[in-house]
Amino acid sequence: MANVSLDLARPAAAARTAGSVRTRRLTVDLFFYVLMTGLAIVFVAPLVWMVGASLKPEPEVLAIPPTFIPRQFEWQNYVEVWGVVPRFLYNSVKLALLSVVGALFFSSLAAYAFARIEFAGRDLAFSVLLSTLMVPGIVTLIPLYIIYRNIGWIDTHYPLWVPRALHSVFAIFLLRQFFKQIPRDLEDAAEIDGASTFRIYWNIMLPQVKPALAAVGIFSFLDSWNDLFGPLIFLNSIGNQTLPVALALFQGEFFSQVSVLMAGATLTVLPVLVIYFSAQKYFIQGITLTGIKG
Amino acid sequence: MAVGVLARPRAGSMSRRRLRRNVEGWLFIAPVMFGVLAFYFVPILVSLFTSFTNWDGLTPYTFIGLDNYERLLTRDQFFRRTLVNTLYYAAGHIPLTILCALGLALLCNRKMPGVTWYRTAYFTPVITNVVAIGLVWSYFYAPGVGILNWFLSLFGVQGPSWLTDVTWAMPAVILVSVWHGIGYPMVILLAGLQGVPESLYEAAKIDGAGTWQRFRNVTFPMITPSLFFLTITQFISSFQVFGLIYILTHGGPANSTNVYIYNLYQNAFQFSKMGYASAMAWILFAIIATVTIVQWKLQKRWVFYE
Image 1: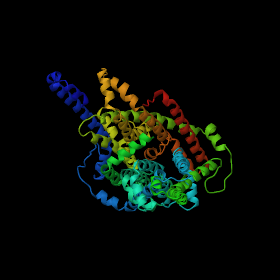
Image 2: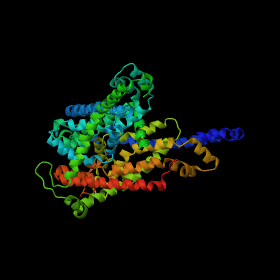
Image 3: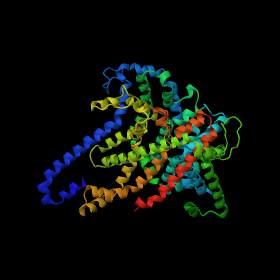
Image 4: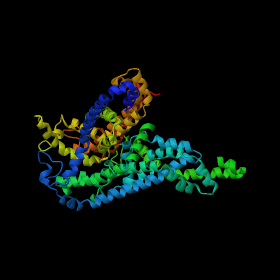
């Protein structure tokens, strides 16, 4: 784009070459569109196949040559999967909601204090918090299992949302950065009006960091929804299991047909895709921030 | 503090205010500080302690000093095997991911209408559940009826039975891991590319630099900080790969894809060797810390900071 405008800045040359430049640019663009579309197919095809398979009669799923769009739609697969998944789906949704709400509230509360309240030991407390990022989660996993077993948390949902609500270091870090950028005037005015610190945080400051809250919410949702290790280790009974892990564990038992299994997989992926497409901006923003700060 | 100046409080109310701020501050951070203590520091201590015992986590244990570490580092042939498998995975996953992500980021950085749609498409696998996509790919890899071998057969190539073949299982896992994980590094690199000032390209162009020279001398140095960040994070995450292995191969065939965390998972939660597995976790921490420090030291040689 830029080089073309540069060429056009020279009128004499432009008059002679504008036409050929335009056709050349068009061919180059076309080449890139074809290349990038091909690559996009590589990345999306497995998901399209999954949705397709969930709508096919069983024999068509593994037929060769494969079909992406079902020749014959079989909605029965979803009726069948609906006989199995509501329990797992409920567990997944419940855990995701508790994780998201908890992480949003407790992380923003702490982040506000770290960014805006001057109190003794603040910087030390913050460095202690950041230091926990150094040790990989796997180190704490085994002792947590032992601890949970001793306090009766195994096969309950607590291990899967309480730590996420209370110990989201990345969320605190991100929100703190955002709180720090807000001008002081708003807070000062409210303080003179006699608003309590909590009211200032809740009514005035929180609405200012909505984009960061969106990013944090999305990340804790994904973290909870896509968790495999946690449910696998901390849950025993079938009725407590989350949807994705139930798919992995009870393939043969509840999802003996590939088409039904793929209907289950589609239900697992769908909520995430909906959120992704509707809140893509915050997504990319959040990831970019981790990269820059890292 | 501006308020203090405006209101001109007496010394007494000032220190009362400071006390109030201290209390409020600690009240606000109390829940997360409790979380850090309960879900991080206490477990760390328990883990360190457990690694010096033969505890199964439930029945009485014996304190065995450094035995676990000594056995892991000098005698456990299987541990060594899983370490080699992990290195194999990392050696495939990291360069492939970063190179392909760079390629995609360069493509998405072209100024063409609709280019964000492509970015969206390339990023989609990252957010999809590892169980769901693992199941999909295991059908793609199936020897008789899989799409991959059908595709290869169109070119007259007879594909192996990917996930059950000792030679091909690991490359198959790596392929899916690159496909699944590429969106994240791509977005990081894209942000890096978009941070390169247009004026640098203009200047290079005036100096007569071609496309490759512009990439080599302008683009590449400018995105080395992003690349550096990615080499560190990709190393850490590839040493902890678990989900795909669990779904695709369960560490098989014949343990050819049994990686560090999978072995740790088996020791801890299938064989109840909590002490042994804790020692493994600490050795992993040591490996990650060492490599990260070395990368940090080496960054002076190749990372360019303005």
